[in-house]
Amino acid sequence: MDWTALSVSLRLAGLTCLLLLPVGLWLGRALALSRFRGRALCEALVALPLVMPPTVLGFYLMQAFGVQAPFGAAWQSLTGGGLNFTFTGILLASLVANLPFAVQPIQRAFETIPPNLREAAWCSGLSPTQTLLRIELPLVWPGLVSALALTFAHTLGEFGVILMVGGAIDGETRTLAIAIYDRVQAFDESGAAVMSAMLLLVSFLTIGVVYGLAGRRRWRRG
Image (tube, rainbow, N blue to C red; front, side, top):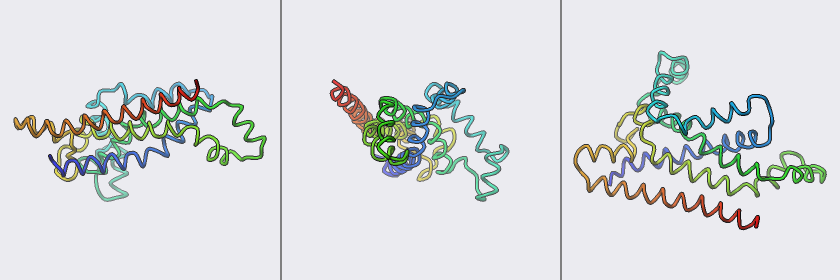
């Protein structure tokens, strides 16, 4: 087991979940409740990482993070360092790649709340913020848990985007998925099998959580 790569993967997955949760909550709620021109385009942009090949997404992010690109140049002028081949770079790339996994489950959860429930809360004297905290969030928590589980599992298994942006720097950008690839390249099949089994277990537990929550919601509706 490559414990250093596992540590990098867990740190990356944890920070990705922490940073994407508020974004997913705000954007998912906005897409669920708002009706505006261009809404379909916004939803398509959010879902784009799902259908774009990871190496293609990683290539464009690598170009955007370069010092010759506006974003990369602005980052370097503010921080004094670049983004490519750094942990910060793969974290930003992970945020982009995992955006649909954080937004879509939360959006679907908010769409199940009847509009008259919010109206009743407002008529009872609750402000929009109080309605969100006291009425909506307790109802959409399965969507929040699903978003966190999917984001965490997908980040652990992400390969193409991370490799393109971060390379394979030990202790910095070399994640568990990249370590598995390196072990296979070195004909260390037993080492690759152990790490692959861990990712398989995480993936299975994640799917179990998501489908378990979905089944519980269907049972409550029934």
